[in-house]
Length: 283
Image (tube, rainbow, N blue to C red; front, top):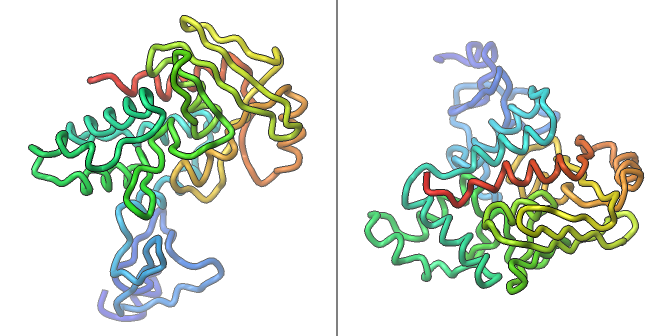
């Protein structure tokens, strides 16, 4: 484009401008185009001025656009979301598996230096590998560079505590993540959570692949913010156990801004198994 008139016609708010389905995902709410052929500046996650959006910011914008037009259920959206977070690079996959196995055996994530042996022959540093996993939302890093979470596990306490094989306690990011741990590890688990409306304890004990819920009427609500972003920020807080369908319905009535659905026990277990049952396979 050579003139401001061309920029106005096509919605170009400086160079570079990126449009998704004709819309500028980085335009501030309520702003007009501010069109022109001058350089455009963006801000990163820390608010610093940068010349272009990061890969992570682009991924978030595309995911949000997909969700805006997606007519499938929240469970299917979540499944697609987690599928996009699977690393394809062999070293990245090996590091992700090592992180998950360390969580499962110790209850805590490895330190970055613990992973150096895995990355030594890759031509890439451990920090670079962890950043790549962070960018695809397979893990999330704390500001100090340490591993804050690796779905389904969290390094800090959440409302979903999971005992693995009656020997290790871990925390899961959400109810569905907690339900997927038994299938991912092929081990018995006991989930201890609670109904966020009443505080009533909800437990799910899985033995040899069979889950028993207490109370027997327990359900799971699956939902997400409309804005898109990493799972930890946009949906994990809304994937919770409830002691009954009535309690879940009461919560959804009080939170109409959170689109989602109530899953019965079989549906919730199937979704957890589908998201995480394959995660440690080598294929």
